[in-house]
Amino acid sequence: MYAKEMLKQSLPLLIVCGLGAIIAGNTLGAMVDILQNIPGLIVVIPAIIALRGNISTALGSRLGSAYHLGIIDAENMWNEDLKQNIIGSLVLSFLMSFIIGVLAYITSLFFNVQPNPLLLIIIVVLAGGISGLILTFLTIIIIYLVFRRGYDPDNITGPALATFGDVVTMLCIFGSAVFVGGIV
Amino acid sequence: MIYSWKKIVKHALPLLTICIIIEIFAGQILQGKQEILILFPVFLISIPVINGVGGNIGSILGARLASGLHVGYISLDIKDKKMHENLFTSIIMGVLTYTILAILIYYTASFSGIRMDDINLIKFISIVLATGFLLICIISIVSVLTAFWSFKRGLDPDDVVAPVVTTVGDTLGIVFLFLLIGVVGV
Image (cartoon, each protein chain N blue to C red):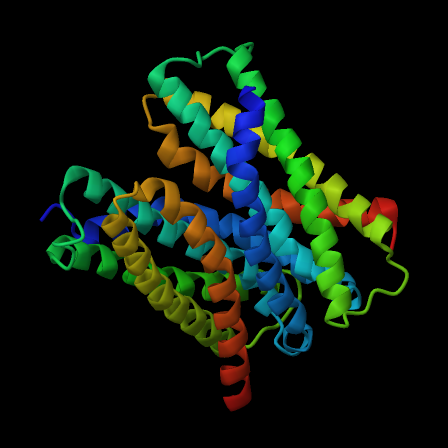
């Protein structure tokens, strides 16, 4: 009975998250030509998706705890604690995206691949930064809606951000690769 | 005010950096095998799905074990019955999820006109399902070990299990996929 209960509660959510991942995957599939034209770009894909997941779910779960502690709620949301949380995740987004770009460039050299370092780093920082902004904004909206309904944010923010996160991140990489690749 | 952005950045930095270094290696495997992915984009589409599902199931299992350990209905014993039950349910859940999603990937890819050559539905499902099964088995064991280890050390498994299983899952998901593509042959 235990197993049945777990399946009933988790399976639908897993499928919905999977649908998000399929959209992200199809975006990646549509990027085949771009991936061929920009060596090193494929290297950053797992790292940037994982980065987004880690930063935004951590933000979601910190805001969930803040709600339980009574630090923020629907009436008193836009306060200094929320601002510090937002700045923290945006700084992490930019900083870590930059590190991803640098690491992808350096490690590629070991495998005899010669990416254009400037192009690669600009694409990653742009994609990481913009997806960071969008997902931080999205997290706050989700948290606000969850507060207003009186649900426990811990049950909702994780899977919701996992679903949106992959899609938003992939679209941002696609967008910035086309944009930056077109300019340089 | 209890939060400061400097503290948030400082606390997150070490774990995120380790995560990213491992993910970059996963990315290098993708670059090394880029030709197969460009020849058969349907596998490129599958990568976020394979990794995402693995990470999600590992995290769900980790969160359940954490609650069980905190409340006390799961004991720190490798023979614990409730832990076994959670472990087996995760594997069953993984098999079901991967089967459903593999069918969906196959048809959305065919629908959007992606080149399949001689990869038929059965072949595709067997590759994705076998990859997923291997991945879920390993991830579930990693999840149990990480939850038990962190709880024993006085850490909160809720903080530790999710980043560990998603990182391990991303890397092994890619490794197992290429292994299975090699075994089944495309």
